[in-house]
Image 1 (cartoon, rainbow, N blue to C red):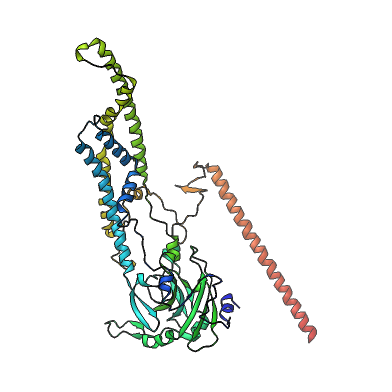
Image 2 (cartoon, rainbow, N blue to C red):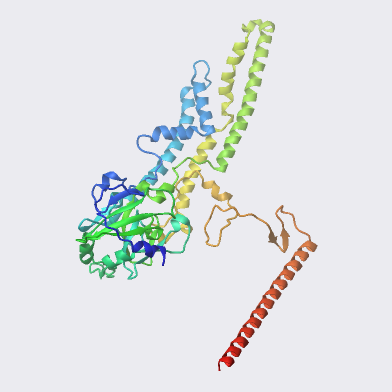
Length: 506
């Protein structure tokens, strides 16, 4: 007997309203309004900034770039009294333009994330609470609600399967957004729940021109209203393929509550989608940031492209060259000035000291600072931003089955140029990109084989390898033939023994 069936046959005498602590870590009663304050809400938040931390965090992110920090330092030096070469306005405007454009670009991109979050959070879903079905926003889903899942739609919270339109209590889900696998996973309604609730009744929607099948709420609602139970399960964790829990439930006036074990086979994961099934019901157990997929998401962080790293290196190299020119110019100024004090008294020059030499470095720094072109970084930021817009308008990069306009979405324009650096994609048999490290042993190009070091093997060695492979293939075929003949001989001997025994009996 399977492990799932052994779990389903367990029954205990336990009050569903018992306040005993959960052996798994989390315990709640279904349809309990108190779950709304006890557990987190189902709000999705993928944006990087908020209204109160946008300006300081965005400025800090801009100053993390070597070029922006250099331009800010240059501006400060130019604003010092008696040192500046250019007017304050001339010094402030270019730096403010560079940093301002970067902040504006980050702000626009984060507004898009806020807009996408708002669309997801305000999406209408159907839940059963207490005695009736309700249409609510996704962000208002709470732990303990019975969530109505519709075919080909994304599941918006982690839930335990309660019922399905399939007579065998089976529901199919696609977890491609979670693990990259395209094959459908099977979720089964526990046998005891199937006996109590049955399958979900359907009727034709008269208000719809195509008369699609919808849930018969009048028949289903009385059954769900009689359901009362407590779920004990694990605390929220990142493991997508591990779940253990227990559901103690009773229908109506049932005195002895039934207890069933819960595992991965009964768990709907947020981010997966229901397929090949019209409708399914699930009891919400994890919401919002406590769902498994959200706990696996990394916090949005600043990324630097290869081009940007090279530019930082170029800026550092230019700074070294510029600093060399500054030191050389300051020393030559010191030498020429002191030489001219005696040779050219009519200039009324004063002899420079070592502190004067050190102080003269600052004006030369401001004067030579424009060796590093500030316009390059402004043009780069604008080019990235416009390029991201063109990428999102590309007709060849659409995905209609996704449910929205299908256009490609550029979450950040910082890494646009990284796409141009991709030459080869190595994929496994499922067609998904994985983190597995594949070791290259050999490759054949134009009839020539190359080994690990990338050196072409000689023709003699290639022929020798081919002969060895053919010889091994012949030996393996010969071994299979000998084994087959020995098996046939043993079968004939067994048949002869059976005939002899039958003759003796006769």
